[in-house]
Amino acid sequence: MFINKQNITDKNILCLILLSLVRITASPKMPEVPKNKTIMTLNIQKIREDFPILQQKIYNRPLVYFDNAATTQRPQQVIDVLTQTYTQYYGNIHRAAHFLADKATAAYEETRDKVKNLINAESREQIIFTKGTTESINLAAFAFGEAFVKAGDEIIVSEMEHHSNIVPWQMMAGRKGAKILMLPIDNDGRLLIEKLEELITPKTKLIAVAHVSNVLGTINPIAQIAQIAHAKGLRIFVDGAQAAPHLQIDVQKLNVDFYALSAHKMYGPNGVGVLYGKKELLEQLPPYQGGGEMISEVKFSGTTYNELPYKFEAGTPNISGVIAFGAAIDYLQNIGFENLSAWEHELLEYATAQLLAIPGLQIYGTQAEKSGVISFNVEGVHFFDLGTMLDKFGIAVRTGHHCADPLMDHFGIQGTVRASFAFYNTKAEIDIFVEALRKVIAMF
Ligand code: 7TS
Image (cartoon, rainbow, N blue to C red; front, top):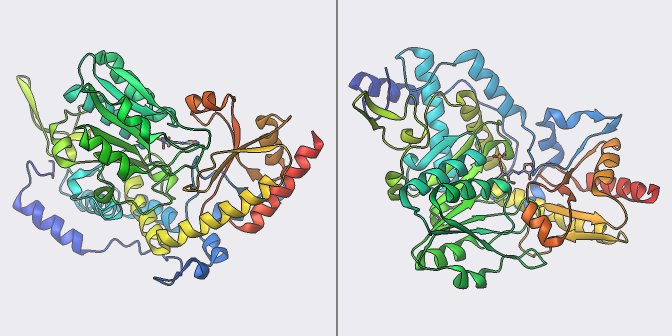
């Protein structure tokens, strides 16, 4: 039996209310961070103790993990909740009126409230759980295309997008006979917002843009782009995969139509993501996938769909992952976004200054509004060789095109080395990284 808005009984309501009053046994120990204090009070060494994976040695050297834009590591508090879910209150959600399923349902739905509060959504119905940003974009592109896009229409996508925010729109455009137009960047990695006015025509339906670039680190002026889009009657889709781990997101202030994020880049489990959408917009969209939970009633003569957000959550989701994502949100909020982003900015400036002192090193993405990502190349040394050799020093960076081929084409390169920071990184790690990099360059 389903427990959802469509076929809820008084008994189930009572049960849910009672369960929501029972605190989940998980009461993870949170890092000791004084509230409303500046970054100076963050005890990074203490925070690092929460991350078991950071304690290990790689090739007999302390691990320096600078691949946080690909995926972050998890604190023990998140791992504990994952374990507790499986050992204490695991059951399939929104169905079966038994204790474990009800408790799992309450914990799963509690994370929906936490996400709603985290990004300041108007209501919990606007928070759709997916398996990641990629699935969130595919959902939005498919459903938006079905509802609003016809032959000859246009979608604007920025040049700095991750493939995840290009390909689903291309696939939809292909199905609908629509066109994709590119919003270009300059050589500093700034979006040429002023070109938007030229690009937008009466046929334009939507602008798809990243909040933060995974290669350049550029923080895009989303509120301004949303204003331009809305003034022209179009929608804006924001890929927040690289923003949500670092910035306090307020979807109402940004006034975006869609916002997507991934839990695994936010110190939470992998296989969990979120799609936020404006309610009146989500209500107009058809489901993306069919199956259990997304229906109201199924007959061979036809099916009616469930209410938001369940209309978009077909099948059994990543129950334990969503529940543990709640612990990651608690962890982040306890540190405070102002504190963590200030520290990450300090790391960015410290590393940038040291890297720029290396002869022949070029950084891609030199905007002032930038998150803790540094992509670079060194003259005469292939990025892949640099990354491989840095690994031997216990340093994890990413090399390659970073799933941003159009951006690589803009700079006329095949790829870069990318170091990306999290709040648990230290200046001492940057020193190790820069010293190792200098050694590797000297070897070549
Ligand atoms: N959008 C952006 C801006 C991203 O950086 C990524 C992943 C995605 C979408 C896709 O997220 P997913 O969680 O669905 O995979 N970026 C990276 C990266 O930069 N290195 O590895 C993955």
